[in-house]
Length: 258
View (cartoon, one colour):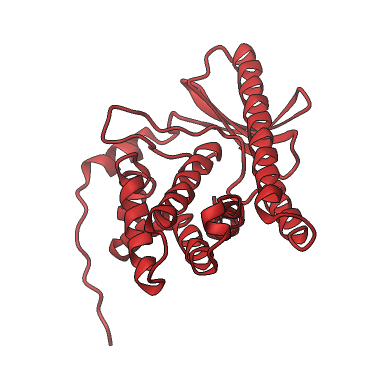
């Protein structure tokens, strides 16, 4: 998900933490958990520092080790350890638990969007993407907005317990619908190597990429109807040019300034 969504979800998890009696009864701990959850909900994306080495390095490392199972407790310890010194006397265990929970939710939500993540290295694994949600999902943000608007009227922890129950029912429904859509498309495109969905804002509308042995099909799917917009063949129309490009070594070009 995008950074703003992770921040909002982190604040929502801090509100959910009020269901914990230890957090709810300690104002300093509550503040520390709010900071820890907000930071923890973004911690796995701290790999953006790889952009300093260029976009290639970022693409190779983003959502790899930083989203792996071994990294999750390390992020939890790092964030809660950084927050704890500013709030002496609070329960480090409860701060760590809620911070770790925020880190975990970050990775889980990333699995649902179209980009996905390599969630379980260093163990043998493959890239996981459920194609269920957008990087910015308005429905999830609206659920949080409703929760925040009700804090003055009801118990904060219970409100956000319902918010997160509703959110995961929503994610389950979107994931189920995405799976059924892929299954239906696979039945019509038997030669498809891969079918990739990118959800639009509308719950029932998807951008579709269908890869076959010979081409890529770009389409829009909605309510059991597929509209193919264009195709791109895999076989180049300029074989001689393609062969020359592969055989010609790259040379360093020095910039000349006047």
